[in-house]
Image (cartoon, rainbow, N blue to C red; front, side, top):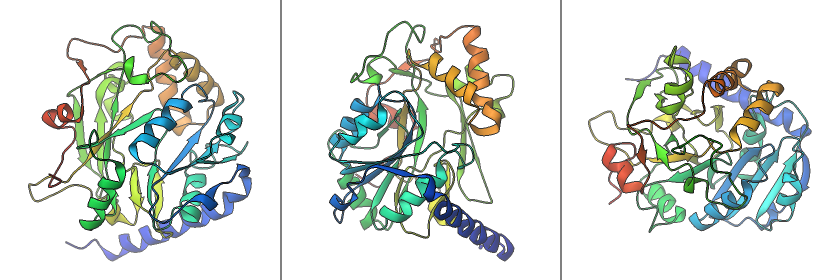
Length: 338
């Protein structure tokens, strides 16, 4: 059934407005290093916004290099921990910095939409945070180029990945995270169930909530828990735009990454390694800055939760093994990608 024409026109106008915002706000970005001239046809690109994530960057870059990302495009939002200098030294990284408001840039998405528009055209583009690690069916034996080639041959332009919160068994500060360390060697547990899925009929995307953050920080009001639905991998066109983080895009067709006829479409997970020994300090910093969604509602909930204890593990928690385990549980699907 085709959507009503007024909604189609509103979405088109919104997409044009988002693209216009991105173009207007590009002026706040200052080059740290621009190696985009090295990008070749067919390269898979990663787009990242970060602030004070220096300790995470070495492992993050190596993880995605091994997976098949050829070039990284970073926006550094006024870090003071040496992040920009570190990124400047990486031969496969282009980096821009800005002191502008993260909140006023729609939580960084204006900056990312501009870089995607300028450099991502006709490339498969992966938009992730430094604490997100993509896994997908066969990722232990098939690289990202193999996945994107299959998506191209299947006529698909986008690929979804549920955000799966990972956490340690003990207190979050019990094991100190070291630079270069695999964060999943510490935060290796997850909730196998307790997720709610609904459909956003205006944008056509799924909306997923639940997991340990809802259980620990939003149990009094689960509908205020963070969204876990993501569409991080897209074959980009200059007319596309992210609407809200990577939760949904325009045009609407990019959000239809599921099968409504009883089958399944291939999907992945973003293993979300937020909950490390660095979490309390990071939460305090972000709460003070108040640059996040809904007046930093999420970080205020974290702060309150940390005062009453910092253990997310419970008897139902499960230790992460591999993508096959997530498929058996039903959190990812290989669809018809045999």
